[in-house]
Length: 537
Image (cartoon, rainbow, N blue to C red; front, top):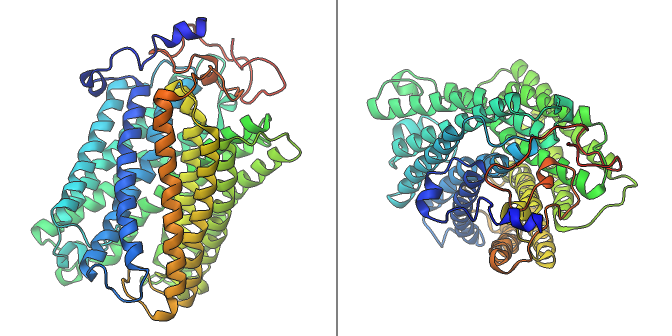
């Protein structure tokens, strides 16, 4: 009864007016607004992917023109990378869970948190305006001199959209860093923090340090595009390879902005559904920081064929092997945690297994592409496309969906259909492999990326890939249906439906506006399964 009475004054029931949501400084509501925004962007990016997968079902370019195909894959990449993959876990789950996980009433700068959402929406709105008024055909990487001089589409507006969106990441990262440093509950030392918080901390470091480089890069691109001053265009005295160095100095660490928070989610799920403290907790925590640091030194493996010396290529190849080590530490330690444990096979845990399977394939093929001799052959082929998607889409989305299902009862106070959730997890895993596994073969055979027509002998593999995309699309659509259904018809969620040990599970579902009604004092380490208590007093 006490739990139910607390739930009646939760953040969802306080005020339903649009004004109250648009002016809120409650981290939980801001997380939900990010959830709605990134879901819309995901659907838009998915529609574009569906269209060009239809095009690639036949060898001839007979559905759309080459120009339209270029615009489809460009905007698919821009929308998915900058407006879904980067913000999905940190801005949605991070915003909602971080203060709860460390015993805080909110983030350090609530108004700045709201501002970051508005900045994100403004940048996204400008980018969608470009899509509706002629599109963009440079590729999501905006490679010069094509993007700075020769492209006839609205590169300037798209660059401004991405430039503005970068400030959203910077504000979010700064907010998280200060929150973790200054607002942890008494007794929550660094080595008692949940691993999801460690992952958000490492991600925030990258956001704050790397995102300004992207902002400078696209700003220089816009200046060259608008004024004709030679920065990247060799015809004007510029250097196009300089753009690649600057772009990938941000964009490779951005890979870890996407994947590190999902790794943190997986740590939470493994501990909860195996009822064990994560094996080698300190090593897993340190591996997050190691990934963030080493990730700044591997950008050159994107430039193996871009006038880079063989010696520089060898150094970047070695560093690319090195960054795989802390990722392997996480994978081995999750496996060791599950070893001989009594695993509870609920839907979030199925996403854990899907993540580990897909991330393993993505990681091993990343080692292949980090090998200098092999990359020369497979550079800019569908092998790279498949590798990228196994890491970014397979890994990030599996972690995001696993975390969303895990914390959905806490976010909404409602339970969803466990049967449909398991069906969806299975469809996503099968559909994903059917979509992208044939692309490894296509890339090895030499099919270039970004081509809308290809030799007939590659059609069978492309048809398999397009069929898999259909299965994958259904797998992604089903959660939208049953999660929305649960808002009205789902069973009321208890405070702790999974038996988790995090601080967020010690309060009502959904939480009250100020999270904790009494001061929290942490007396145990994270994941104190079998030791009694919830880790607080």
